[in-house]
Amino acid sequence: MEIATVARPYAEALFQIAQKQDLTQWSQLIEALANIGSHPQVLEVANNPNLRKDQIAEILFSIFRCENDELVKNFIQVLVDNDRVSLLPEIAHQFEELKNASQGAAIAKIATAFPLTEAQVDDIVSKLEKRFGRKLIPTVEVDDSLIGGICATVGDEVLDLSVRGKLQKMQETLVS
Image (spheres, rainbow, N blue to C red):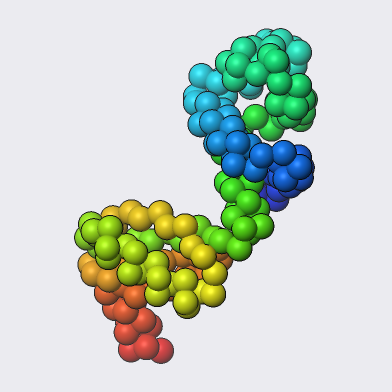
């Protein structure tokens, strides 16, 4: 089964709780949990066959410093009981997507061949927002294999305006 499919119910449940409280605070909390939860030593504890689930949960409560937060403790306990601690990064990712969608926004992953100035990023984001019809939150990374141009991913849509992408299309056209 795909990780995203397994993580979705957890992200949706957390999102429902967060909507009734402080969405931004929950977003920060879940991101922090995901960062800690993806650490190899934390995963080693979570997957240790020599520990009982209640022992694993207690260790994680202290690592996550959530002894006084019943909602977070319950969430971690559910993850431990179902052997899902390793899903924390994916749960956080899906939670962020739900939060952004509720606010009419989406994450735009922008890959460029060369580093961009802030003004260039703002210009690209402005054009992409018109193209995709929603507010975008950009994450930019440099990928020199693009040769030139950009490749933008918003949700499951990809806009490939890179030199590499154009060369691949030309090759496909010539081969067919």
